[in-house]
Image (cartoon, rainbow, N blue to C red; front, side, top):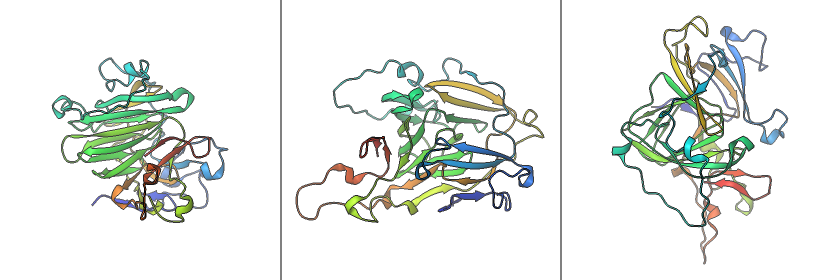
Length: 319
């Protein structure tokens, strides 16, 4: 059984006592760990919108050689080349699933294909829509993260075993997952070839929609969202530059990929606390609302997550 638990206070530690008591950034963290803050919003964002998580890790994540542009041929297909050649058309669009035969040599990252989008990640506006098809695991000594936005993953076929800096998430069919901007992760295929959909949100973060006249319950309930339990790899050396192995870390920054190779695992967070973390949700727990008299309500009654804009009631994207 996968190690997940409900975390209403959003705290987790892989070693008891790794979380500081009473403060976030002590002068001497427990076990000699390093304190880092992962920010999803500005520090001064309104309290109800503020997204921050404190990480307590074995080595600083900033201790790595400089990132360099990824070599040609390593970028996810259509992410880099086609993002600058987006065609805006007024037609309805649909996409057939990508063939498993064509994806057998691709992992989750290289199997991402950008098919639609709007806006610009440098301006923190808009989104990118992807279809993914993967036939193999990511290399166990690799990690990927996006500096452009949060990634909503919707498996259509095959289960994904996702290792994040904050712990593991096993995402099955009929479940969804959200990986926040800046969180490193590695994807393994838990049940063979996998394909599905993904949406990268450049603007803001996903949240539960307001319920209005529905009342206090219904649609997706906060208690049903699951966060990972802290878990770390022991594959690290005495210093950030001396380790037993080499890890390839790839970052997507302004729809361009960069890479660096570091001597320590990126999965070394021993404890964390905050409200900015990966999570998953079982769509079978969605409490659908519908009419019992006549006609048909708007499809917004089926919204699981919404990404809001400054205009009240208007979203960048609804899922």
